Structures are given as structure tokens and as C-alpha cells.
Length: 205
Image (cartoon, rainbow, N blue to C red; front, side, top):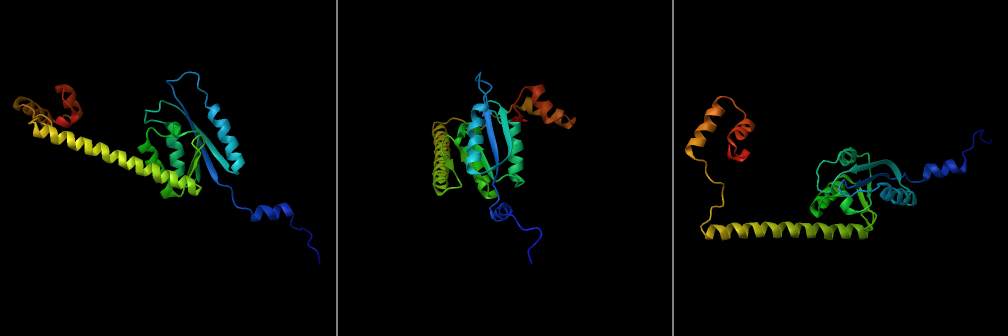
């Protein structure tokens, strides 16, 4: 006996086909460079996502300098990544996404721990592929090497200053200033107000 409601072929295909990966598109244009339009980035990223069969869950655009840490849309997208609501982050270029190589590596390490992939369109880096994974590993190694070099230079500079008899720690406060700090502190004055009133750095108080 034939079923009155036979399953259509297209429905059968939908049930067996893999779910589309949820992708977030991120773009940034600098406030320092006039005439920039985020659509320049977004158009190419939308087309790429469509070719790959991704499901675009949102577009996040910041109008901010690459040096600033405050990027509202970036933080919104990162929050969704941490909630596992996004599986791929798609950007136009590295410098639109991260302020430095180290910042990029830190972000990608977090993505990796959450099972989230990262694609940079211009650099053709895609962590969903073995080639992309290899490039990321090389970048991480270079960032670690750069950090170690900076650390060694700082240590060498401090050692040289010490050998020359130079003070490498903060200069001590004179007795009169220390007494004023103690007096204000005893009066329950906040550290912030003390430093402002006496014209000294926060660490000194």
C-alpha cells in the first residue's frame, strides 16, 4: 500500500545533507582614513561565504583605529564565539581584525580551544584546511620568538644599567611626601585622589 504522504526527494536530501557552518563576518574601517567604506570588505566576504555554503549569522563592523582596544562590534562577536553560537570567523585581512601579530595569535588560540575556525580572505588563510593550520602554527611560533627576543633585550638592558651603577627600580619617595601619603590614607582618602592631589604616579602611592 502506497503512503498518502510520500517523502519528496528534496526533503530526503535536506535530511541527509550536513548542516551549514555558522559564520560571523567581521570588518573594520579606520576613523583615521577618510573615504573608507566597509562594503568594500563585506561584498567580497559575503560572496566567499556563499561559495563555501556557510550560513552567515551576522555582520559586525567597527569604525575604529587599529590601535584602539575598544571595538564594540568585535566584543559582541567574540561574546557569541564564546557562547558557541559561531563556528567560523571570516575577515577581509589580518590587520582589519587584530592590532598586532601577538593579538592575532592570542585570538586564534582561543578560537582553536573553542573549536572555532578562522578565515582571512586576502591572505588566503583558512584554519579549516591543513594548509591554514600549518600557517597558523608558523605564525604562533614567530610571535613567541618575537616575545622572547623583546624579553631578552629588556633583561640585557637592565643588566647593563645595573653594571653601570644606574638605578633600575623606581626612585624612593622622600620622607615628607611619604608622611603626606600616610596622613591622607589615614583620613580614608582614596589612592586615586592621593595621587592626583600630590601629583605622583599611582604605583608610587
